Length: 246
Image 1 (spheres, rainbow, N blue to C red):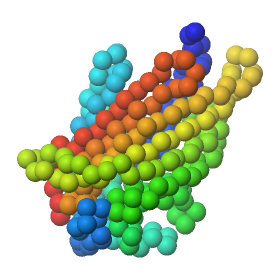
Image 2 (cartoon, helix red, strand yellow):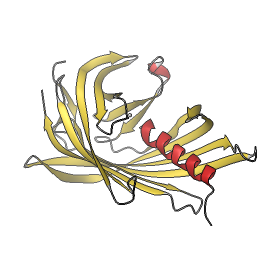
Image 3 (tube, rainbow, N blue to C red):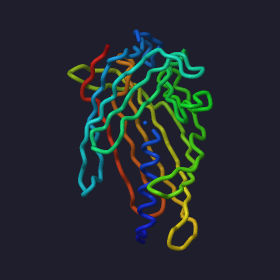
Image 4 (spheres, helix red, strand yellow):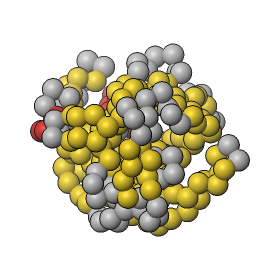
């Protein structure tokens, strides 16, 4: 069974929405490894290589991603230990994106999801690098305009701690905590040809490695797939290649 052109474009749009949804002086908190998790200071920079398959013409696409720390230990709503990061992607069309993490007193790290105009109404999704506590919840319920189409999207996230490991970055062996996220997104829009409703469900498995010794991520891998026999599957892996801590 093959997807229609409209259905395939709709599915691709949903994948893009889901993937993009997840966008001072030094301080420290407890880390998952029992040591100290350093909060990177302003001027810290993290460079990644991002590998995507399939690429625009099949095979693989490779781009670089740079996360630059703008502020750290700042206030955002009721969150008082926030790391403000600017993400830049050198693909020629993605604009820079502001990303906010809070270093919690529990030792975990949370990421802000939602409108910056109402930070206390946002959802702060946890990376349980210290408590190892599972979490699940609704992280999105809104109508978006994607390439001229109105898409109503519901997204649920289930988070779990998988264990500890190591990452070799710049010749240094960094201890890491592996976090797994299962995102399920259901999106509905109107078929422009028939006037009926099109519903698309996308599942994303996200594996994230966090290194307490640098206070940041060494790996972020997303595997997305459509649940409608369309064989629409994409893998995107972002690996830390170098960093500078301030």
